Image (cartoon, rainbow, N blue to C red; front, side, top):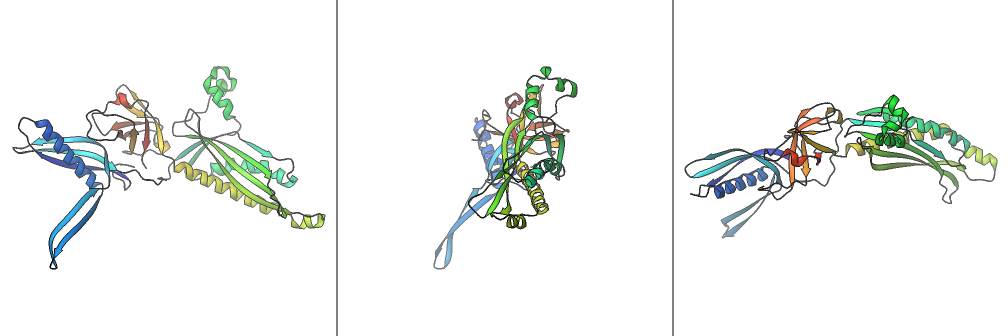
Length: 359
């Protein structure tokens, strides 16, 4: 989400005013700031309830209750002015509320495909068994052709070996000669697996289960995040003691192949949707007075996109939450420079914290 997007968060400006108290400017400043924060929250949305007192068919009293439906997540003071009687403070604030719904938005997905595996049980009919390695190979082709997906194909490289090489590349000849795959913070690694097993549950057909499994890892640390599985039931042959009935009841292998390919396509599409529903997040780096994150335009980060950093305690803050708002100031291919909304936040306090960008 950028500052002006229509979403659960938005950036607003508001002014608050308080009477100048002689000899106690800090109390006046605090009250003006509280007023500005309340107005900012109202600009994020409000509920209005009311009632009327009626006598002899005449309204004698109207009462309205205005309650903000959003809260201020972070703010900074833009200006402070004094007149003879009043002190006015103008602020810029990010207001919003956390939604229970996932925000899913298409963005570039970078995936490095590694060597997977396929497994066929010994009691699988030979025709189905011969198609299993073909289906396994097509998984790589299907994922490579998905929209908004950029694939680096290392299907001949074992992810386990890559992890060992990253731990100590000096002991790995392949890493010395060919180098290690470069995986950015917002990128994913994937290991596909295919299983073909018998699935007979006391019915009249010989059933088999084709299971497509995606093991998903994130970032240069190759951190496992989830395993997604998608099952296809194959009704292959009617159970009979007569060979003739077995032959004529056997499913057409071309139709089975067609259904398997469609299943793998739907599985890959659902897998991509799940990735798009995951928030774009990474670790912050504060160095030499600059705050950066290893996410850039190749990972789908946009100019002025807002990120939320939780777990920060800000001294003398008017807010009860412990979050800081940052936004993307300069975006490069694989990293970005961020700025906090609140100028009083020390960048060193944000080092190694996790920022989660709002779509």
